[in-house]
Length: 257
Picture (cartoon, helix red, strand yellow):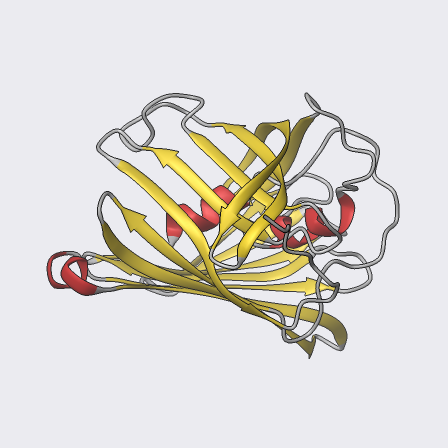
């Protein structure tokens, strides 16, 4: 689940943004099947709920990941991520990360004060807290995906456009870059679909094989829903495919054979 969500953060762009109709709505839900090598490693879900938080209208997005099958016997994964996105500004107000990955646990909450450019990070495992300076209009690792779904315009984006994001995660400010590679028609569980293809540039380390190890596709329509992710890891490869969805805001089309 962590890897899937980290892959989804690369959805911000240096090209001009224009106001567009929202790409998601209350009740939207995605389910992903994650493969590691030849066996299913886990499932992950993303769900949008329209709520009120601190007297503000927000989209409360909940992401969950759970290992399955043989992996669950040897390396249990049980992750929950949440973000509260203010509807008017599209900025995160609160982010929660509660994970257990093979006994490695984290339970932190981030409270964003965008007016002061500060973030308060509370570590619920040791009952500590600390303030950090954040960049203007920063996103968290989940809110950025929904922010860019609203902003990227499939009608104007051009091959080679660079994508940049300001992100606050794990008590640090980050800037990520990815490149729009162009359009493809890909096979999905639901049939062939037109897609936008992206290549993020990541740090080659103990997880990723090289800087260009990731590729992902989103639907080439107003939904911009994630369809597929591929990653070459230092050991093996990982693939995530959209397995189920419901309550999309806009129509989508399956291409005929």
